[in-house]
Image 1 (tube, helix red, strand yellow):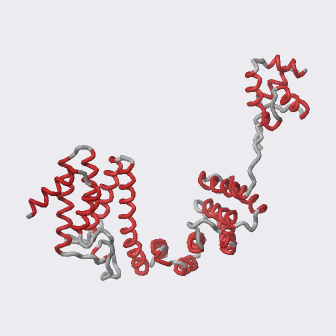
Image 2 (cartoon, one colour):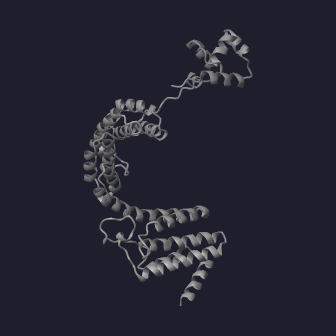
Image 3 (cartoon, rainbow, N blue to C red):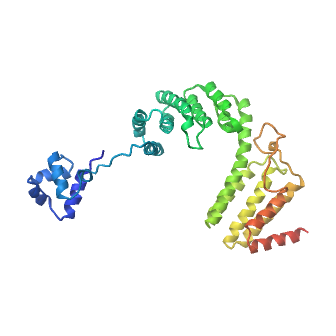
Length: 357
């Protein structure tokens, strides 16, 4: 409970145009007493608080500023999330209280465990780490209650593995991650942990698989951002993320020969041309389309979908990428022009087609 008597007494008194002296006279107390209440130096007796509330035509709860906490389960969980979001260590004590009230509620146990992980990371608090592991184990037993699709046994085990790594239990952490690495979701974390153990030969295959998946995910993410920015008419933001993405993919080139990122960048360059055209930059749009066409033609002449053609990849050099851009890079570029481009962009593309004949 937060006591706001001092502030509220002052507000109510001034609303009625009363001085401290006048309020003191009404209540039959000294002006010094009223001064001390509003200066937070003392509190009136209960009988006087009730008299004040009656005089100001309000309730004692309102006068004191008392706000009852919503102790329902959902509200409790939301409070725990808020403490974690604000990185407020008071959340640790709040989690303890919540666990006493809801010891078998998945959401409470899970978020109490996450709180332990959050506040143990910076200073490697071993007691918090051990307690967090116990709470995560309890959360796994209660998982049937979970309604959040983002939380699963796999995600819980991933967080437990991080805690074991912080405790110096590297082999246990790696074993836990490998058992729950369906679809390679923990390839990056496994690779990182192996490098921390000075085992680079084991780490690089995991890191390579992670990089391969990240490349495809990044393309989808950039296109999602671009579509969102176009819908919001935030064309500067669209240009910024497209230029960034093109640079990232270009940095993955393994040499001067065509590779899969050329196909990706062909599509991004068309999007960039569209964004430039929104600012009336016809010359800039034309340059982006010329680059897109050149990349697509270059890739289609010697298509190479091998992930091993990308920089940094060290394993499965014959494994290939799959995409839904189009059967060819040029087809993907044309379809992107057709779906995004306005009349002027189509005119530029037609000119490029004629010049290529």
